[in-house]
Length: 221
Image (cartoon, rainbow, N blue to C red; front, side):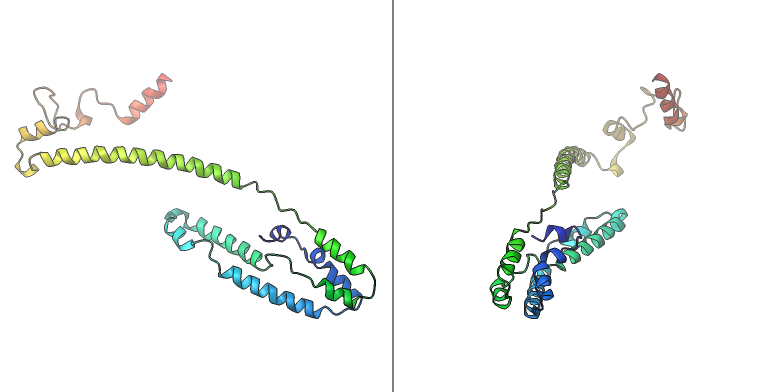
């Protein structure tokens, strides 16, 4: 967990480090404390950077070509956000209050600072986006399931067609009668379904183009 106010881009140094700042005003050296803190931040940042969270290469392989630019812009924003988060410690640094109590002669001053520091609670921003993402995931899963079901049905139909084609005579061995028997919907049938030369749909009596059918359909509404 990172500090919520840091995630929000707020400058929290004057609040979190206020005890150190006040001690410096009293003339007490805090160089040792800052050195320990810098070492702590470096170790924390190195450990967090080493952790891999998103496999961008695997995601890029699944992004359509027409969405590559949007994916690149999204990755850039994500990298900027991650760098901003990793620039700050995951947890607030620990302060050696006992050492400051020995160095500061004012009774109760360090205790007051310690109470204020320990009482500081930064509220974590409310997550308003995750429920929307979960709803989209659920809707997408329903679409995926429906598509898979339809695809399985199409595969079964195609397999039946393949089996039917394999059961037929090879085309180079078919006569016109064989072709008519195998594909009655596509073959010429001058006896039962006589047509005019060149026997294309456009040259037949009563033919209507798609535009004509669309116009008639709109006229009925």
